[in-house]
Image (cartoon, rainbow, N blue to C red):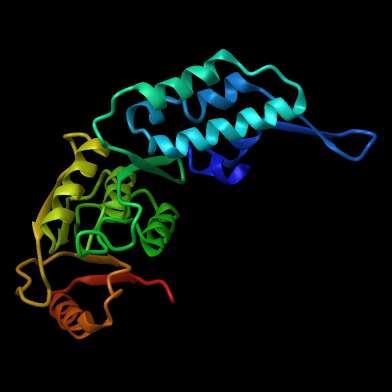
Length: 255
């Protein structure tokens, strides 16, 4: 099942060519799997070892690969059993990640499985944040050179982390949100993905209540109008930032 493979650490789509299929005379598919390469780029990759996916997901993946191997008559590599044992028996600290691959960059985020958790949607990465990052991936390397970026409703930190990795010439990146749990989770994601050399700050900003004290060059926002009730306050906030000379790029998903 290639859907499981896509969620594990692989650098490019070509890295998913681990399964070599051959049509035999009776019309059935014969499976040949380079197990060592498959494991080294998924459950046993350095990225997954340092930023592991949830064990339940890892177990489902390993079991599916074992089924394919057994169905094709191939012997299961001991390394695959080791992976199963590690995820079943090894103690974990409760930090599990989902890794995203945008261009040549990998971003590993702690996030919840639920759309709404602890009364907020900010503990989950949303579609528009991923697409905004992909859009920025196509911009020139000097985009944002010596400029300050303010992100509204930064959530898990997906867009900000990508921008800070992609554009080393940024003067400063300010990530904001209004939920204490979201801000704490965002700070952890930033520390996992970024080095001390990049310049960013995390601020509490509730545009329904607070006056925006920043004067950035660029304002970013992705999927920040899930609750349509807050749109008038968002528009008011953006209008003030635009009056100060900022340019705004807001990405939204049509639902």
